[in-house]
Image (cartoon, rainbow, N blue to C red; front, top):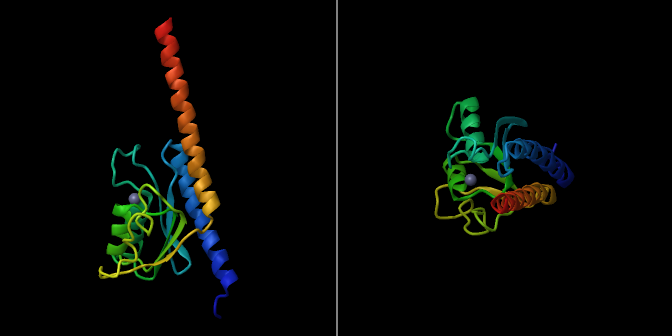
Length: 173
Ligand SMILES: [Zn+2]
């Protein structure tokens, strides 16, 4: 049976919610909340969330972790027939890895003005000069995906402000 537009939207929302669950794991660790899942044949075969500070590595972005896990599950570096869901538009590193992994479809939640390489700053995912181009869907559960980031940065600003005030009062004592 051919999927209707409604079915596709429901499917996208379902997996984006799963990616958001991953983002919440990052939030708990005090990391920028970004999450990712990779789906093959209706099943999630790779999950990942941002652990850059926790693991002290710039390589520990959500998408890279999910790609590593998915590759182990299907025993191939090529993630053909997979769909990658990510709460924030991939950066240059992750967009590069997605193209390298030949992932055919990428579903993005919120766009990133600071590092987006799925069309905002660069469009690595759909560049016709590379040997692989992804089909890109943008703005799936965009409000939820950007709300979790906004909340994180607001909390961070409050924490930093409190820290500064604490330091100031210590100096005065
Ligand atoms: Zn990245």
